[in-house]
Length: 324
Length: 217
Image (tube, rainbow over all chains, first blue to last red; front, side):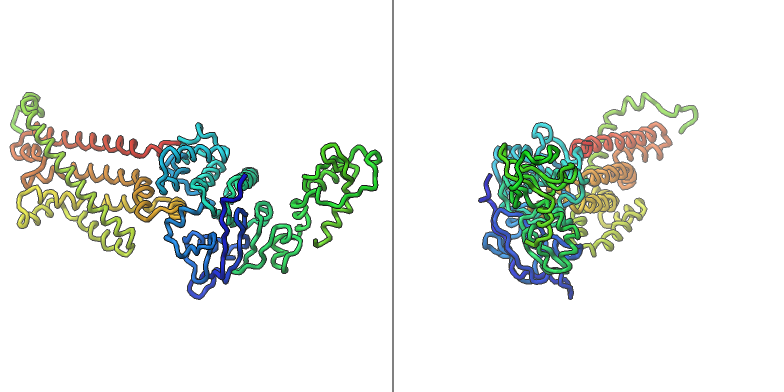
């Protein structure tokens, strides 16, 4: 569990012009080391263009992009790209290489010794949940979509990049697999401590995965905030509409029972036995669903065996109404 | 064919095995040189087309035109300059391989999926590494399909070069015609066809060996 490997990533007045059209307009934001920043917005908002300027697949017209304070435009593009992980929606595994060879791509380009590449490949396959002895020797055509995307993530992480770029990586898999891949991705990201810039058009994905969310529209940054704040305080009607009219409910998924003001005036014995038992770590969304499903309409919050108090519907309602 | 003589005289065949072996060597040599030189030229032209797509139309026009010239006429046109030599034969044979090889090399490389290329660029492959390590290996099946076609058609065409003093098995066919000797004519034709079949089978084996991933499902 380290978060020291990631680098800081900063956009400073970055613009991209195609002819007379500004695809990205004076974009500025900072991503702290080891955090996940999600670029989200409707199609044509400039999010993918912004992402591809980091590894110089697209060259900015103006401004600078800094990784740990160093401007990417001053670096040799191939050397730069070998230090940045890159995952795309279509994965782009090399069909003629085995899974192990695919994962070892960047270490091989960097000239790592064979034994080190083999060890790292095995470690990464295990990390993304693919049994090395079963998968290392297979070809991409022999894998399912979800398995291929896992290999794509492993390949991007191979040379321990301080920054990883992900362009709608889970957009092409079915919802159940997507949910699982998202959870795995969060676990892996916490484990590797890589700074991630992640593009999606799915606001739910942005809220679930992001430490920071950058909402873009027409090449401009409309709001840059942690997901909770985005839901609680959308800066304008566009963001409010984009995050959805159910933003109050979405926020509940980000808040935990432990962070709530509980009702402690009622003794535990006085509460209906039907009331669900909630732990401080469970989300308010989960708590709400269980409370509504029970006849009691309240939840008993227990920290282990210790009774902390009652969570009531009115407390949750107050939380939704409050803009805090 | 003289009256009363059998279509095939097996005794003549048995007594001329040395000559067949000699003609085989000649036939293989003419074919290998033609396909190899043709491949090198077509490869260079393909890279040019891929780098500068504007050159595709003129290059395709020239190689396509060469392909349409009747072989007999082409050899006749070359004789005043290069004589009854291997060079004359090869100029013609190489010319006929270009269109097929060129089209398959270009098609094979263009057939590499865009996302594979994007991933390669994004991970820091240089343009040269992308060509040699990604595009060419992935294009190999299509390229070898082109080499198979070029090889088969060249083996057939080599027999025509007997008219300019070369010819491999074509020499047997030519002499057979001139002497009304069906045995020699048939042997020349059958051996030429057999060579084409064997060469094609060897190239199929080569392709399978070089592209193991195409069979992985």
